[in-house]
Length: 572
Ligand SMILES: *[C@@H]1O[C@H](CO)[C@@H](O)[C@H](O)[C@H]1NC(C)=O
Ligand SMILES: *[C@@H]1O[C@H](CO)[C@@H](O)[C@H](O)[C@H]1NC(C)=O
Ligand SMILES: *[C@@H]1O[C@H](CO)[C@@H](O)[C@H](O)[C@H]1NC(C)=O
Ligand SMILES: *[C@H]1O[C@@H](CO)[C@H](O)[C@@H](O)[C@@H]1NC(C)=O
Image: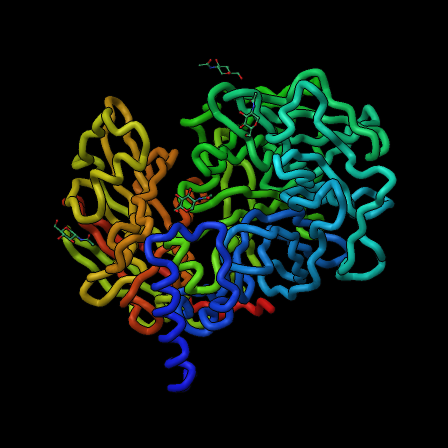
């Protein structure tokens, strides 16, 4: 509760801020006097209930996720001093279930000549018989020259691994040689062990405009030698940040630990492209220190993405306790830096997702970790609900601002599908032209999330089906354009295509995790995923509603819908 006193102080500080900030670009500026005020007031209705988010300040990349001795560890890039990027340390939280978290002290922060100007992203490797080792990027001067460093737990028996040390004898463990661009050399991967007795890691880089994943080998985890050829590179993709490389089995949805040889696996190479700020991956094969993407996996700009919304710098880890591979990804804000300063916080993590190979072999599938279901409370259902064109039906009886919804739609014919305009190169171009407000043939149909009763504000997540020569194109959109009456927000109509054959089975499913300022959606069992950050002004708390809708001529049936109130996670 805000007492009259504190709100007066708040208004005073707010006007002060508006004065200070008048027309000034606030990026990289810190306003320490405002941090504590804003945590209590502005932005409170947009804080998330079950997505990972510290009480205040700026966060970005997930770092070094691992499972060790019964505990999940999660580190992340964090500014202890404010809600804009800067002063980056590795903050550290621990958990037994990937959903409820307890913060412990910062694990890694600038303290040595080799990381004086920054402790940037990296990964953890659990070395059998030895315990965890963190590799991270140290920034050693103002010119941002980067080296790779390592840290180990001071007391491997401490279940929370609270303290980390950086042994002086070998750090930095890896410095760029003459052929490597030292100011574009970062984000070491988890190491994998091969039968030839070597550990291997990747480090992201660029050579002019070519994105590069350098490969390094070591026998003892101490001396690392760069392989003659990068594992992979691709022209005109710019800096490759946060590379990730791992095997996925062909025949089941289990995760695999390190890179294994053999024919029963495929490999995934993911890079975060600094130029577009999205995470792209290919499926391919790996042999003799070379990675070759499959011919079904486009390499580069047009390629597959983990998520077609706000989702970047992701990192996966193998969870031996459930034999699964889990990915974390950072979702930044879509409001302005000034808003972030007022709120006192910026950045959240997407819900950790289990990842495995689609049985079609052409892409991955992702799904929220099963532990999330433990937060599900009251459930409501809808069955066999017919939706004619222009109909919205409210899903009543849940807390629509903090919910989990799973829905299966069906329809009887594809005849009314609209033609696909070849001018729409990217899915987002199609969604820009064909939003929920443009009535169609088969679709748009889906959910209206974080909506006001009369739809002054709403974030539609929907499908729309097009005809393109002799095939159908399935578009999935998460459209923020009507999400908020507030202006000066980034409100993209995020979109991706869904690789699905609807000719025999005319059904498609959707799951959306709605959490105040996040709508995180999984199309058709996690084939196409989109996370949107939105900031409704009216559709907040109990004023938020949820609808199913259809705005196409082809009638749509909601075969089955389940929606749950979501409890808040315990994130201390
Ligand atoms: C090296 O990396 C820096 C930072 O990304 C970039 O500005 C510079 O152009 C790169 N140099 C070359 C030769 O690629
Ligand atoms: C793609 O590769 C597979 C083998 O991996 C091959 O059978 C197929 O012909 C190739 N397709 C094209 C279009 O090159
Ligand atoms: C459905 O289409 C009508 C007509 O274009 C539009 O007014 C309405 O806003 C659309 N519904 C949604 C949910 O976008
Ligand atoms: C998130 O914020 C939006 C709006 O400011 C930018 O356009 C994106 O580039 C940014 N994403 C990342 C990963 O930084």
